[in-house]
View 1 (cartoon, rainbow, N blue to C red):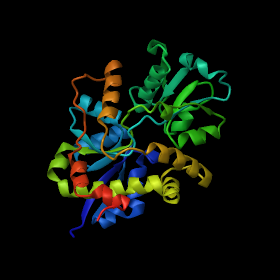
View 2 (cartoon, one colour):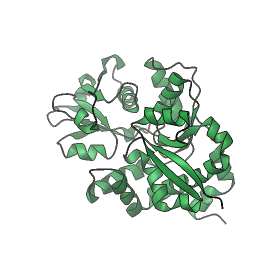
View 3 (cartoon, helix red, strand yellow):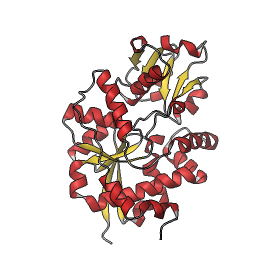
Amino acid sequence: MTRRTIRIGIAHRGAGVAPIFAALRDGGFEREGIATDLIDLADHADALKALEAGTVDIINSVGPEVLLHNARNHGSAVIVASAISRTAVEIMVPPEWPDDRLLVDARWGVLRRFDPDHLTAVQTFRFENWPIDRLDLKEAPAGKNRLDRLLAPGRFDAVVLHAPDPILARAKGWRAAVDTARYDAPMQNSCAATTKRFVHDERPILQAYLRAYAQGVWRFRYDAAFGRQVLLDTCSGLDASAACEAWLYFARVFGGGIYPSPAGLLSARDILVELGAISKAIALPLDQAPMAELEADGLFGSIAGTGS
């Protein structure tokens, strides 16, 4: 087997990139004859720019960021696999917050407008039947440490945090007012994205990557010890107890198929259109064909141990 190198852009070292590190720890890339070159990038927007420029081949991203990138840059990014296709974050409030029913009047904080956390705040208002014009949302000041920027005393009354950040926030006295997983709302979260060019020109190595990705996601979901170790290896600031709590949360929301989610992307597009961030004419950035071909070849039965 000819060994090929695939350049993987890493936008952050959080639990959202667990599929990549699960595939690495599971040995999937080696089994597929793929060498990996991990390239650290500043954030999701930077990762998508690197993808478009051809300096990386594939990234782990989120649906809203891919939509924004394509709309603003005439981009050709497409999502080819999914680990999480539902809204699955926690709305955290500071120790002094008096009543969760007052969240409609809270000062909401996000790192950047129109990011996935902004969309989650909008979804929360919808599900709680709160007037959207009451959403008082501000960006956190620029800086490196995400939690310090969001949890600074007196800055915000409500912040949207992805596991394992809620665990670290609780250590600072914050608590969860809403677990948005209870809404079971479609939203394309953790997913594998590449370019239309790579899908067309590099189909064999893309499918090898997706086989390793699918196997890693499957094992992360169902092998607790493996999943906890992936999180310990990937996320800074976690001890064994926090990794266990984070894995339990992610194992619960890493459900569904590994296909990219049309419903999750439609939900994200609708909110971004409502916020005036993009035009409704923007196409959904997904390509289900590579995963469908792998399913037809018996991938899922093989992973589940039911294939011949």
